[in-house]
Amino acid sequence: MNEAAVVAQSAAPYLLSDGVLAHYLFVSAAMFSLGLIGFITRRNLIVMFLCTELMFQAAGIALIAFGRYHLGEDGQSFVIFVLCVAAAEAAMALALVVLLFRRHESLSAEPWKELHG
Amino acid sequence: MEQFISPIVLYMVCVLGAAGLALALPRRGPNLVPLGAVFLAGAAGLAVVSMASRVGGFTLSAGGPGLFFYLFAAIGLGASVRVITHPRPVYSALYFILTIIASCGLYLLMGAEFMAFALIIIYAGAILITYLFVIMLATQAPTGTQRDLTDDTDAVAREPVVGAIIGFVLMGMISTLLFDGVGSLQTPERFDPDAVLADLPRKADRVLREADLIEPYEQVLRIEPGRAALDTEARTIVIYNERSDSTRTLGPDRWPDDLRATNLDRLGWNLLNDHPMTIEIAGVILLMAMLGATVLARRHIEFEEELKAEKARHLSPRTGRVGNTGGAS
Image (tube, rainbow over all chains, first blue to last red; front, side):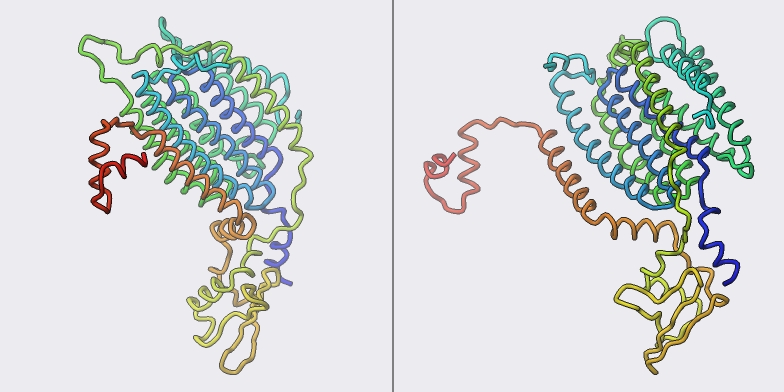
């Protein structure tokens, strides 16, 4: 058994250390919170949907970081599905925005607060 | 948690960040964005210094995430802040593209090349352009006398202080839980990046043929359909000769450099082998979204009854009486 075979058996050279994983997760948490804050505070429907995309993006970073940490591809596969859901969400949300814009001639979310309850 | 960042520093980062963001969110009156930016930069600097000192500085060799990580993370988070604080939606969308490109940099650092470029093409290239189209479509043309192009919807945030507090409390909680949990994760002890090659006999055939290591009438031996007789640990390949119906073994010294599983090979294999049903479901979701978007965004056009009857008569294959088509509706 030669040198290359020994390297291939041990996972050590490929592993991500706990500290590095923590860095990526911190970025992901911060980006998710920023998306949430934007969703709460902004009043423009399109910016609100952009903020949900920001949260998807944060989830993607966390998934890829965990996938890299476990040395598998499942994280990356999940990001493909996150991308699918984000695309579907964008299509629906933008159709909805166009519909709502026709009703009130404004992108503000305020006229729709009568929908509560 | 203490091994990554001290809790006091984390809470200080959250408080500073919340204060900075509450100042930077759009409002009428004095422009406080520069002050908010100073607070946010302080929070980011505190987090970077505290976390980098625990993993051994900014260099890769010391076990840290490397300088590029900090660069892309700073660009990504800075652009995210701009997405939610910029008063004009078009600029928000453009800053979101910057966020995506920065996170693609992070993906590249983590060895997910395919996802990084797919993200740029799909997100920055397709989804965000659709957003830009809708922003352009759904914005009222400014009247001539109006000096300020932004109206209250965009220029005034709703409850910026409460929103920032909620967001940063959530961030503190998520980070605390994540940092606590990271220490107890299990990592695999053995890992072979080329292990998937045994499942890809045609790729092995092609690479060996391009490297002129096998004759046209030879191929990699299949143990069973779709499984190659290829040992990635000992780096040996068994070649099957169709003419003489015999086999020979290619040793580790003749293993071609090109014969390795790329990120795309492994991701594709994982996607199709482990999650085939999920792909179907994703397809159904996308189809439903397409139908839903079409139904939602169509415009109702009211025809008068006479016009409807005339159209129906026109479309009907039989030139029957009007009563036939009209009665059905």
